[in-house]
Length: 274
Ligand SMILES: NC(=O)c1ccc[n+]([C@@H]2O[C@H](COP(=O)([O-])OP(=O)(O)OC[C@H]3O[C@@H](n4cnc5c(N)ncnc54)[C@H](OP(=O)(O)O)[C@@H]3O)[C@@H](O)[C@H]2O)c1
Image 1 (cartoon, protein in one colour):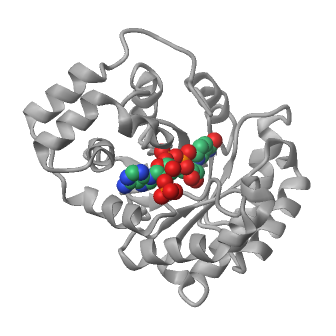
Image 2 (tube, rainbow, N blue to C red):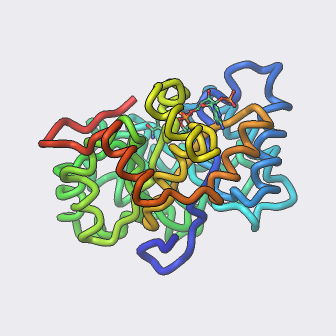
């Protein structure tokens, strides 16, 4: 997967929302991330919000001694995204992650702080080497247009949004807008937080392909070569199964069946988010 600055990023990564919520599970959560890294899913997505910082600490444990293998993504709260507050928030994240740099630092969603202030802070962090690049999350096409009108707004490397088979609204305007400008999209909750996997139509299509519903849901996203996809899995069997999604090929008949069961948007809609 190519980023706008020419660097590569893994297409399939590891989410961390809900990790760190239960302290007694921290060891298992870190082990799931290590397992994912060992299998080659070397993008990890986290945020200062997750587990109130504890997810970042778990990531720090998982990447200890192998930082250079990992493409590390974290996010700043909108209320911490000011000219000075974003610098301080990033430094707190770096301490929890036990690293000296974040590969991709995102504004978690748009808040009330002017975008120009956030961009100035992100550019400062980039110049100082604390982040390698920055992006946004939960931005619709109008938000991105405002961002791109700022002098350094075009340095935005991604927009992380909700995207899965049953949530295809972004295909109407946002995804084409980003593709026209070669800004790759990062798809969050690619398994619909698990609920998608119980949909009868998906279960039937997956069975006909000899794959699991999760693998079909991920393969459907991964066939689009300009996406990053970040399923979260704490269960070891889920981590392995998700990696195997890279080996699932969806032929024209399977894609048509998926389109029939989960139709593309027929018009504009507000950006869905969690
Ligand atoms: N920017 C944002 O606003 C935003 C919002 C939401 C999410 N995110 C990011 O996106 C990541 C992924 O989204 P998500 O955590 O909301 O949901 P998700 O990845 O769509 O689904 C996670 C759920 O699916 C289960 N699962 C994983 N692999 C499976 C498999 N192969 N078979 C069956 N079940 C499986 C997990 O169970 P186990 O954990 O028990 O294995 C968990 O319950 C987050 O962790 C976070 O990093 C970002």
